[in-house]
Image (cartoon, rainbow, N blue to C red):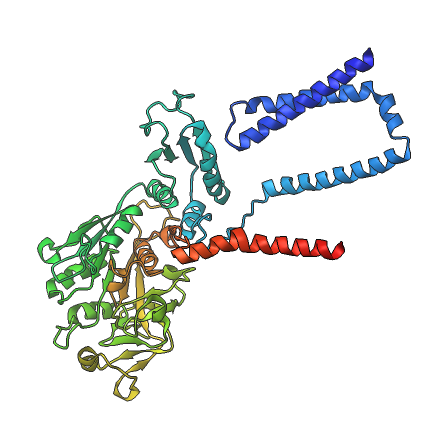
Length: 529
């Protein structure tokens, strides 16, 4: 009678342990309603199994006394050792987080920009996800990456239907949709997308607390940040908005001064020179720890008016803007479908703007920008974009503009590559009264590019052009946490086939390969027979 009872207890214990395992498996697929019962059931099942073993100890001992039992014991021990190794690997893996992203565009890895922003968090960042319970897992998979990069990031998952109190006061999306709330230092940002760029942008907004303003000058034929034309700057203006900047136009001749809220002033490809009064206004702005991005294109025509005042301003900051056009015959331009008139850069001398920057950038019609040896007025500039050795700065502008044909001629003043087409300079300024001693000191910062088209709508899609412009604005505005490679959209890697190709694949997969396998099998059977 006792033996029968212990047998029943053993089967019940086995069933309870299986139930606990089933709950754990269900939880991994998003069914976590009964997860709280898993541990108690597992403990209860193990206790029942121990009772069964104690009640049947004589029979169990007898089972292990024979030769077959010893062999079985050896096999069982081997199985336990393998299981122990697997458990140890999983235990170590749960604490040593390591993943390999083998996708071509690294779509399952966080971008450098996101990593940089997370690593510089000063306070806890709490992310609340409001969604139906069966949608939690897909967000856990993504947000775990954020938590792994920074211990200051934590996440919470709330089903509004089951926890209405926790969702009170939050403007939620319609049922079936997802709302995310990010909380940092008493500030909050609401999201309806789990796209990495959107999440990173929200974190940047929370960290900064204020929106920085970028002014684009107007009145001299500069690039228009509101224009969607090929030579417009709307795409880059949208990118600035995504990183917590606001943009506006500035006509210096009318305004008379640079607004106090200007984080950066951008002069993008002026067709005519600035007036002396406007240059004086810019110098006054720079004297108050201002930030200036100056993009000067080479002349479009032989009779184009020279930009002498702007070129002189660049020289005051240790940068010589050449009266030339950079030509690149390295063949690198063919990779992006351009000719020798579009120099391509893959070499970036050390500078904060191009830290860990390894992308190609292209510059439709660029001129040289060279750092003056020894500096000017104490301003030491540093080049950070160079073309290839098979490029040169063409000094015969008339010949190139009229005929389009060029050849290197050192005797006439052509300069052999690599050619610098972007440089930067800075000057220390005093910090504001009451500022913390470890706070970044305000600086005057100036960057000069020999081209403005690289950031235009027509060229912004070229590999690193967008990132380089955004890194430049990040450095100028003294937000080094924004200097990084940004998230990329997943490549469309679908295979498009013609009707004939689809037919060939169908015959190959359904008839030819199975037929060959069948033929080999029959042949082998016939030979053995």
